[in-house]
Length: 545
Image 1: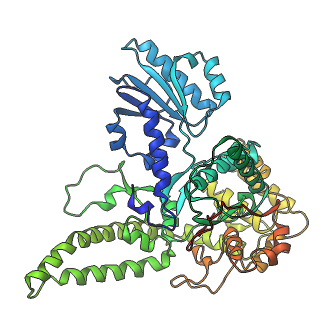
Image 2: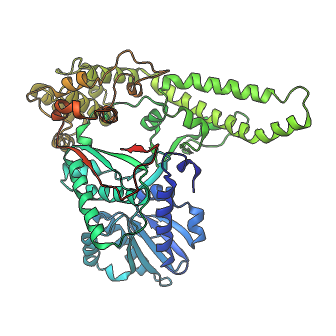
């Protein structure tokens, strides 16, 4: 078990252990040597559940990404495909099987593990492609949650928002409900449930149906003590602004600039080589660094506003320096032994400090640039309701200079959300400029953003203006170094979903917020789940969001 997963208020390592056991049981059904072929979106998440060493102990000799064409040759008895239930991936699986059959090598057994559920549509697709009969086993690897840290799990459903809001596919809601039921099987029934939005209501309804079905079909078993006392379900559609705003914490900026995938980020490796190292051609290489609370220094600075990171690193450098200075001067044998015992930890902290100092330097090169500062100023003006109802000159400049389209669209969406919609002339101007500069194919991009509500025409009430004042979504005088309010994460803006959570833990909960909740889309949920006798929440329980 990973120690960084078990240090929180609930033992997240239990989620990892459950998934690991299930994967090993599935592998045990495939007798002999194995090659695993991964849907590339799953390789990282499943790596958090089962490391390669563990797979190798279970006769997994080769691992390949799922791609079109032939699989690389491998002297194994079993080929196991591990994939999400998506039709385009079934085509790749079929290609691989045809390629393997045509290669004429020794005969192999094929197996297919769907994550997290089987799909009748995918199975039918495989039948149409003529490869369904080639599988010795078609199973489910029911892993709904991937543990990232002691207080964080992810379903890793990158397309969930698009599927639900754009394609009207509610499958992800079923998976969310199933994931919560898995949590309850490990950590006990969650007595209080609150939520906002149509998807939140659907997830709650699905949970109720699943609980009833479980009562009808399963014999009463050992029910764990309730360890989580409150579940908060919030639709992404309730708070569209927060994911658009630039993150300004240390970890947030790493994600903005370098992207964090499955707790790992990649950096230019040449910046991490020592000056006396032999120079090599590293221009295309990337240094992978795992970022989780298992590393003491990262745990200390990850959530700090970036302006507070420099002073924190400086303090740590002085502390380490003073610890190493202790080796000088006369010492007793006992003191020398104590120093030697502390030395490995001191050396690890020194290496960690060097790594994070380099990362901070890389981030500072970006955050000091005019491009970043102008973009951030524009965001903060929008958040404060300044110049939101007209064509913004900075967005026009970005389009004229053909800045990355994602940056332009992010700002246009932010302006639309903070203005509760754009005036027709403003929207038409942006559309025309974007299509002329970036190409006609982006009519589809703009239409998609309109369909999900990220860009819309202004109609009626200015909800954001009321929400900003009522919930104090913008805070001008907050400290970034010693913060007392969550707005420090964006230097000005307090995420709406966090404000809802903060009100929920007050004595009156959401009772005083009825007018505000009425401005947000969809129904409000305030429900309770009955606990088995003697299974009340224990002290120190947490809210799960």
